[in-house]
Structures are given as structure tokens and as C-alpha cells.
Amino acid sequence: MAPPSAPKSTLRLRLTLLVAGTLLPLIVFASGVVYLNHMRARDAAFERVSEVVRATRLVLDTEMRGVTLALEVLANTQALQRDDLVGFRANAAAFLKNYPGQSISLATRDGRQIMNTNIPEGEPVPPRINRRSIEAVFSTGKPDYSDLFIGSVTRKPIITVSVPV
Image (cartoon, rainbow, N blue to C red):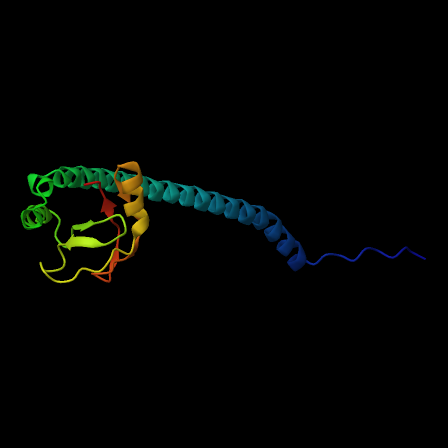
């Protein structure tokens, strides 16, 4: 009696194994290349976004420094030295021509606004909401910047630059 022979592979099975054995490594390699390209593109995009953020921050910092210096000059005007609020309001209006949509207010340490360019002269002025910035200016004698908050007059999100007067 002859030993049983191993089942013979069909031509179809052999061709399938040949194609799979040839294509599978290529598919794995191509997937790896696609993944690495994706990771490089993602890292490059992240770097571009980071550069834009750094550049934007630099521009905003420069603008805030310029505004702060201009406000410090305005705070030392003759009108304020003489307690001339009408004259100071005129100075502030001239200053604000360079910053449309902005306003200037004078406030005491407790947050009471003495003047606000968004409110016509003679009308009552509400107290300042953000007192932390005012307190910082009074305690350090240096300019201070608030966080973003909703203004009591404009009812819009604002950031204040507080300078000592």
C-alpha cells in the first residue's frame, strides 16, 4: 500500500499566494511611506501655524507698547495737570482719531469713572467693572493690562490698558 500523497496545490491557489506574497510587502511599504509623509506634512503645518502665532503676538505686543506709550503721554498733558476735564476730553478725542472705536476713561482707585469718551459730557458714568487693573496701577505706578471682559458702557468684549495719571 502506497503512503497517502500530499494534496496538490491548484494553479489558482499558487497564483493567489504569489500575488499576495508580492503585493503584501508593497502595500505595507506604501502605507509606511504615506504615513511618514502625513507626519512630516503635519509637523510642517504645525510649524507654520506656530510661526504665524509668534508673528501675530509680536505685532500685538508692539502695538500694545505703542498704545501704552501714547496713553502715558496723554496722561501727562497740561489739561490733566490743571484738572481741566473739558480740555482733556478734547485731547482724548484727538488721540482717539488714530484709534477708531476705542475709548478713554479716567477712574479713581475705587473704580469710579470720572470721565469716559463713550459717554457724552455731563451724563452719569457707571463704575469700572475691571478693578484689578486699576488697583495694580495704583499700587505699582506702572501700566497694567486687563484680561478680556465685557465693558460696562459698550457691553462688548474689551481689554483695558490702564496707565497712572
